[in-house]
Image 1 (cartoon, rainbow, N blue to C red):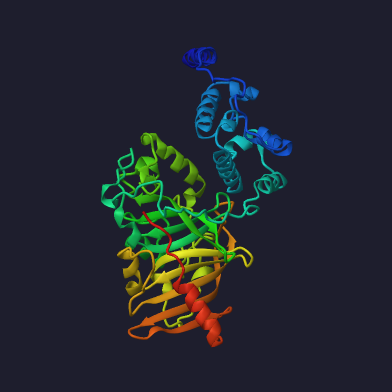
Image 2: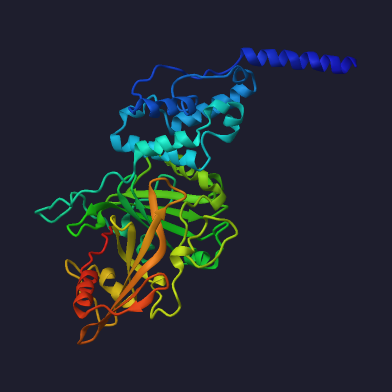
Amino acid sequence: MRVIWKLGIAGGALFVLAQLIRPTIPAKPATAEIQAPPAVKQILNKSCYSCHSDERRLAWFDRIEPAYLIARHDILIARSHLNFSTLGSASPAEQRAKLFEAVNMIQLGAMPLPQFVALHPDARVSPEELAELKAYLAPWAHMPSLPIDNPKGGSATTRVSLSEVRPEPNALAFDPTFENWKLISTTDRGDNNTFRFILGNDVAVKAAQSGNISPWPDGTRFAKVAWQQELGEDGLIHPGKFVQVELMVKDARQYKATDGWGWGRWRGLDLKPYGKDAHFVTECTGCHMPVRGNDYVYTLPITSAHANREQVVNNAAASFPSSLPWQPLGWRPITMLVDPGMHATATLYGNDAAMQVLDRRVEPALAYPSGSVLALVTWAQRDDPHWFGGRIPDTPQRVEFVQISAGRGTDGYRVFEGRDLIETHPAAGDAAQRTSFILNLKPASLP
């Protein structure tokens, strides 16, 4: 009993000492607080400011060690990712992007942290409050602009040889073979008016086709290629200026410290590495944290393979009958477009013969060689369940094929439409118009 009594006294003394000796949590007035309507700011203030601001808000039980050290650690990490007390100094586009990311975290249940909400129930974001935030951001309220003519026909940024692109500061090397990878899915991003191709190497494609994606196997490589959206004179939205390419490389052992993935981003036609130092990776891992249950991958691959969990694969978009003359999902993509009035997205695919033109970078006009087959696949759109402000392909609505034969020009236009993609036979004039439209779609620009 005497030993237990002494240990109790010693423990109590250490507990008291711990309350007196502690590192501080810096606090100061906001210098550039985010500007938003009062209702929006009230939600952010209630649910986010405890960790994501320069204010110091601690419940009485947060002030007791060791809870204090845990709270301090979480607050400092949270501020480094997002600080509403200083976010107002960022560009409007960056502020908007941060808000979209925050809303997405809330939507997926990642923020506020579940353990924080358990102790601070007032921080919970109600469904009505989440709807208020989404309505304020209104990702589809603004259409992209018509492209601005460049009389010199050039770009302000010089292209760089893909073999000479510098690695990221975390030592992840650029992969110049990404342009030859197959399409995993596409995304129409209303939050920042961009289009995305999500491409995968052979390992990724094989995994998606077999459903072996929980987790994705080592050797998987993704390239997320982004373009600015441009509104065409035809009323459709097309890819415009190239923005960036992001890489994810799976190696569970090599990249154990960064969730099993190597991360990198290269921006502009000169493919400048994004990171200032190796710590940029925390942006990647932090952003992908809400989908850790999907091996940190946001994309739902278009595949007929089934998964044990919902919202992991996109089976609806892969529902093509075997009776089609070709199966274009195995081909490489050329470009994509969106019909905003019909809420439809389309991707133009080309077989190996057609892609020879792009591989040779024949400009400015395309002349698809004999043996080429183009396929324009149109899907209905649905909201991306993993990203608020994104839309992805849903059920196929139409598949159009244009085949090129030697000495005969276009050797027929065929179209398959409706729920079961049944072949229809349009009038000759309509077929010729659609053939011309498909042949003249401009490939999405690549560096």
